[in-house]
Image (tube, rainbow, N blue to C red; front, top):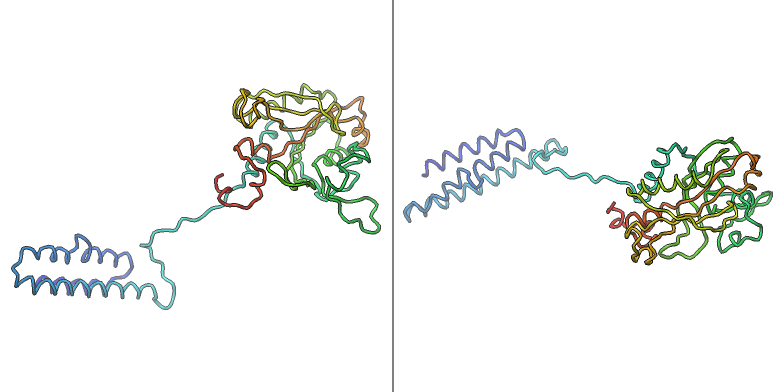
Length: 341
């Protein structure tokens, strides 16, 4: 047994000395010191030896184990510090690379855009977020005394000397209706994604900064039948199931007639639940036929052309789609929330 220990010692020392990489070094460690290694086999066989032999062989085998362990560690450090440069240990487990992903609002906005693009709508740049009073209010048929112009609804910017038109942070994406129609002739059908700003208190369903996607379709034969088909198709594709819609009369200065659009509750299917407050319906957007005054402002003949417009909020859609109770969660920066998507 002593002879075998000497043979293992000489062979192991020589192999460790001539080892060329960490992978080979790890193999040697397993070969000699592993659970089924040569040295461990000697230690396990001590039970078959006499007491006198155990007193001699046991300490020698354990001493050799400590020596080989030290040699292996020194050789490993030699590799790692070779020539003073960092050394790649190919035996170490790889680190999983963290990859980023899209924000839930971006996911929903992209989905909305792709649905409208599949229905031949063009996607137009959202336009300036710092807007003039003319495009945000006047050209949209919003009266001078309308409450939306007051400070409690609008972020007005300080007017510099020489500026003819007051500036503000736009309260909706509707100014892009005027800006687009000024430069293009019908027929056309567009959507305009962008950010808007409202000066109001924040709560579970209100934010001062949120997204809006404007839709505008103008032509000689555009009517509410076209509008109803498009939004019914849109919501059915968005929620991946057939949804009934409901049109209710409403008032917006830039459309006539004005409409509020409800969809069948996406959770209960119209039976009534806590999401729809037992009504079976969810209010999702304002809409209507483009007011003739808007057409006149951009030089269209209201007797020849007509169209419809509506605005939908990605936050509202995302809250319904993912059952999120508070709009403020989208802007909290909480990665525990964001990483769920």
